[in-house]
Amino acid sequence: MSTDFDRAKYVFRNPLWFLRKVLNGFRANQGFLLSGAVAYYTLLSIVPMLALILIVLSQLIDTQQLLETMREYLGLVTPVEASDVAEQIAVVLNNWKLFGVVGLVILLFFSSLAFTMLENAMSVIFFHRVIVRRRHFLISAIIPYCYIFFLALGLLVVSMVSGTIHSLDDKTFLLLGHEWSLSGFTAGLVYFFGIVGEILLLTSLYLVMPTGRLALSHALIGGVTATFLWEITRHFLVWYFATLSVVNVVYGTFATAIIILLSLEAAAIILLLGAQVISEYERIGNEQFSQQDLQT
Image: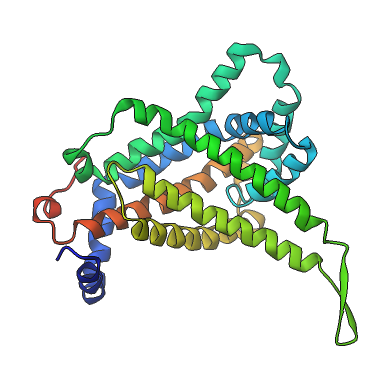
């Protein structure tokens, strides 16, 4: 049962068994604890990382355009408090020259923490790969900074494309005797590019973070599924915090950080649960590891 076709056929014939296997594996791997750790380190990293990216890109493109683009797409990560995060990044961006070399190095270090923690979490989920082959520590050290570089490159491209798209907001066209505005179309196009970027990012995380080589098809399926689940969760979080939540009453001035942390926790659970699905899927038919569970 080594081919993808055989595995897929087995899963379709035994969906409840596979679901139970995934949930049991996620529980055995302390998935919620790992998700909390990933969310916490992402909270530490998100402002330094995006500020560092904008510091570099502001030498190439208008700062205000970068901030507007970042604010739009931050809503895909922190759906409720994106404006607050963007404002804090703007503060760092306006004062980065006061940091000095040591401050920028510290900024760079904190930017990498989320990716380092995510790699460690993935090594627990894909422990059967770690048993066979461990990743060299230098590669693990370089991966976070490669991601930061490619995120910067992606933000640069998106900023230029987004600027071009938004220039069409005031344009109109005649169709069937009626004048139609392009503003709704451009908003949908910006959202579409955000979703595509989200899929590519999640796919790359599934492809790169686990030790060894993962099939691109598996990573892509995981990326699309995780994006779909996150979009549902994101809209639910927006509705929940707007209508039912008492976080502001309970936590007061800490509410913003708590809301962001809860959003990141939900995203991390979806990301690691997707990794657990891939891990269990590729272990089907492998007798050497099918009976093993990592107890933590």
